[in-house]
Image (cartoon, rainbow, N blue to C red; front, side, top):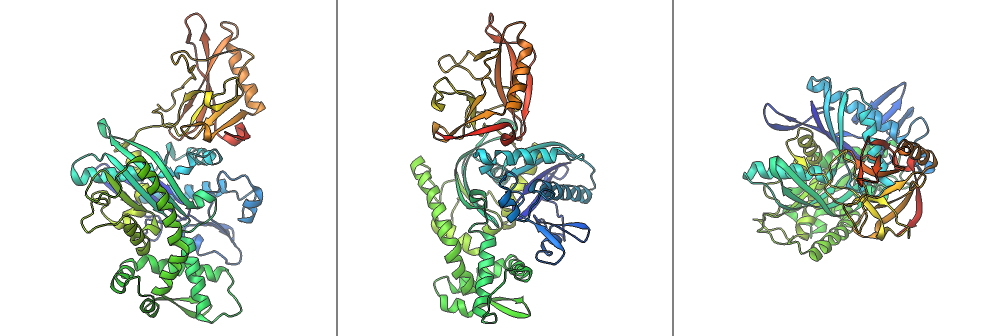
Length: 554
C-alpha cells in the first residue's frame, strides 16, 4: 500500500492511488471526513486525536497539543513551555503519536498491514532555511521509525500540489502541462504563495521547480498569522463584544474556543450559501449585509448573532491587507521575470487556490479581483475538478508520487561545499549547487572552480571542518557551518584508513529522497587523479546537532 499525506498545521489529510480503478481517493479517518484536526489530547489516562482531541480544549483534566508540526525544529525552551510542551511532551513526541495514529487508522480502514511507500508533504520554507531544515529530517526519521512503514519520502507541499494539478490537466486534456502554476495556499495558520515551473518529461516524469515564494503566518513567522484561525477567532470575539451580553469582558477559555469551532463548522458547511448571499447583495452594501444574519453561535447560554456584514468587516480588517501585500510581491516578481500572468487566454499559466481557507468566498473573490478574472478565463481550467480538492491537493499529489504515477525531478534545495582559503562563500568549491539536478544517494565531490573535472583532494590531517551552505544563487544567503568536535573526530578517523596507501582522500555530499544530508569519504589516487576504493559515509540526521552555525551571514 502506498500513501500520500499532507501533515498540516491545523488539519491533516491522507490519500491513495488505486491501481485497479486508476482513481485517486482520500482516506477518511474520523466521522467520514477526509480531514482530521492536527491535535492530540491527553487526560484521564488516555490519548485522543483529531476531532475528539480538539473538543477537549480548555476542559479540566485534559492537556491539548497543537502546532507541533511547525515546532519540530524549535529549540527555544521558553517558547515551547509557553505553548504547553515539556520534556515528556515535546513537539517531536506529539508528532510521532499523531502520525502513528493516522497511519494505523488508514491501514485499518483500507484493510492493509504495511505501507510500502509513504510520501509526506512539508512547507517549501523547510527547504530554504537552515533554521527549519531539521524539521524535514526529524519528520522523516519519525516516519522511518514506524515498523509498519517501509520507505519514506519527504517532498515540498507546492511540488506535490503541482503534481496533482499536472495530473488533472493531462487527464482532462490529453496533453502534458508545461508552464507556470501559481499556488495560493491559505490554511488555518498560514498563507504560502509559491510559483512553480512545470515541464513534462519522458515516462511520466514531471520537472517541478520552485521559482519564487512568499507568504505570511505560521510558516513564515513561527506563529498563527492572518489566516483562517485568526479570522474565525476575531469574528467570534467581535460578535460577542457587539452582542452586549458580556460587558465585563471575554475570556478566551474552553467555551470561547468551542464557539470558534462551531463557527468554523458553520462556515465550512455553508460555503455555497455564503457565496450566494454575497453575490446577491454585493460586498459594497454594508448596511444590508449587517441586516442579514449568517448564523447564531451559543456562548455561555446566549445566542450570539453573526451577520454577513461582520464576516466582511473582519475580513477587510484582518485578511485582505495581508493577502493584498503578498500577492503584490509575487506579481512584482512575475513582472520582472516576464511571466504573462495577466493573460486570461493562455494555457501556460495557471492559478490554483489551495487549502481550506482558500475555499472561503471572500478569499476567492479577492484573488479573482486581483488577477481580473473573466467569465471565460483559462487560468483555472483543467487543473482542478472539484472545489473540495483544493484542501486535498497536497495529499492527492503525494499519493501520485508514492505510486510512481508522477515522478518529480530531483533538484538540490541548497548549495553545499567547502570554503576556500579566503573564507569567501563567493569563492567556495561546491559539491552541488542550488536547484542543480541531482541523483538521490549519489555522492558529489567538490571540484576546483578553475578545473571542474578535478576533484579536490585533502591530505590526511588537514581535513576541512568548515562548510558553506547557500540557499540562493549568490552569496547573500550563504552561511558557514562548522562540524562539531565529536563528528570532526569521526571524520578524521574515517579518513585515516586511506593513510597507508595514498595519504589523501576526497570528501563529498549526498542527499536522500527526504533531503537528509550525508558526508562521504573516499581514498584518492594521486597518480591516476581519481577516487577509488570503498566509500565511507556519515549520515547527518540533524543540522543543529551536527553543526555549529556561524553568526556571520554573507
